[in-house]
Amino acid sequence: FSPERFLRRRADHGESVLELDPSVVDPATVAFGFGRRICPGRYLAYESLWLTIASILVVFDIAKTLDTRGDPVIPSAEYTDTFVS
Image 1: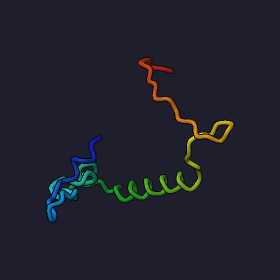
Image 2 (image 1 turned 60 degrees about the vertical axis):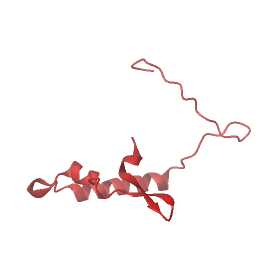
Image 3 (image 1 turned 180 degrees about the vertical axis):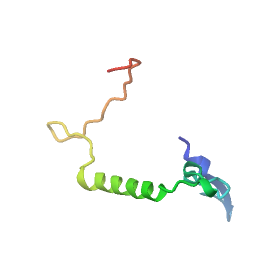
């Protein structure tokens, strides 16, 4: 994932400023089609995604685990090359 692909640099009073690149096609247009064949369920998909994310943020406390002393536990970033861990 490279979010820089949606940005471009613009010179503004000698400073380099990042802004959205209007020449990049909106991913939602590509994902749901266009013209006569556009997906009729795209609005339902947007609203379902919004409700799911909002429900997760309201119900769950997303934070790092604390150890016995109350310090946050940083998970290890070790990967295995097996199919099942």
